[in-house]
Image (tube, protein in one colour):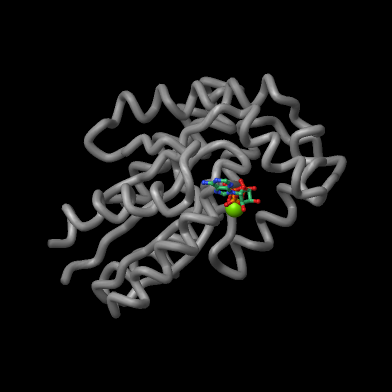
Length: 205
Ligand SMILES: Nc1ncnc2c1ncn2[C@@H]1O[C@H](COP(=O)(O)OP(=O)(O)OP(=O)(O)O)[C@@H](O)[C@H]1O
Ligand SMILES: [Mg+2]
């Protein structure tokens, strides 16, 4: 079997981690070697960059500078984790990747979008398949409210911001239909997982 690079995208709380857990169990059961990783992060150095980016600070970086830091973290992650795993013919499951940069930073600045895309060409790896777990942000919000710990996230950014994120994710998916599969996230986890596995099986058989 050849390596396979899978990424998961979607708004906060759409069910990425839940699906990644189910998929990991599936690959374990099928004895398929895989690596589970995430962005921003995935390596020691990238996690340090993540901390600087997420920490309340007074650096007042522009969205372009923020984007360069995300891209530096991605480069480290690709060099040290993703490319080596693919070379060893493993499956890589990545929680968020380049599409998140295009959405979260790209929707705030076209210069940031151009910058990230030109650097991404040099990073030179794209997922073989991306699952966009799409759902109405109101539903994701209701789920989050049932988990008290996650309330802040939505209070910080607001529901309108989540709607904008959703639209931007869908726009990207509609431009890259060969790579990005839009999965309806408002279904039970097992139904979603079976749709994801069906798509993957088409690639690895
Ligand atoms: N299909 C589903 N139906 C109902 N609830 C779900 C479903 N998938 C996930 N959940 C619940 O919704 C919440 C958010 O799911 P999860 O943490 O998987 O989302 P996420 O996309 O990883 O979020 P984040 O962006 O914060 O990492 C969790 O409480 C999870 O148990
Ligand atoms: Mg998650």
